[in-house]
Image (cartoon, rainbow, N blue to C red; front, side, top):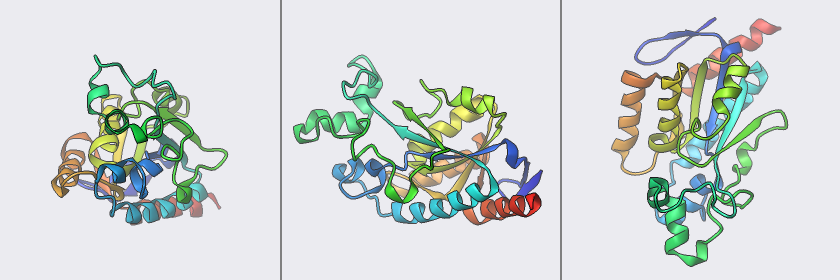
Length: 229
């Protein structure tokens, strides 16, 4: 067990029962020309989150911490996107843009497209899994819960985009499923006004889990490396 500096209080965790969950670090959300950028959202905070994730992934790999990527994904025929009776059909940004602007049809978050791919800086390694999801939460319609249970994982370090949508949705469902969600505050980027990020952080600190920073996570990862030598 190691003690992780966190808010609202430090917590003791077993890194052998922990996973780093990288949420939707895709071109769609982090790069110029991606879905969020095409919509006109401010993606300027993505660069910092990318850098922090690079450091976290390197430390996690050295420590042998499980790494799981999530990716918002639609099939080419949109059969997993929901029909007009689904709220996802009406509210999810990629689906809306593809309907409203024909030049984007078949290009946003479609499996295998450039928009869908994990950004080059954070590509998964061969032994790391990528779980496709068609809703904001990584637990909905996926095998994430089964996979975590098969690995006896209980602590989830959450990074990625967007803090107040897919990251928070995944963290909420993790809490409901009896996992310990830990938001890495400087490894995420929100969408919308800054109060959206502030609200997500408050929710994690006070209701759904804990908030820590990358330097503190890297510190415990490095302690794990030292202990295993």
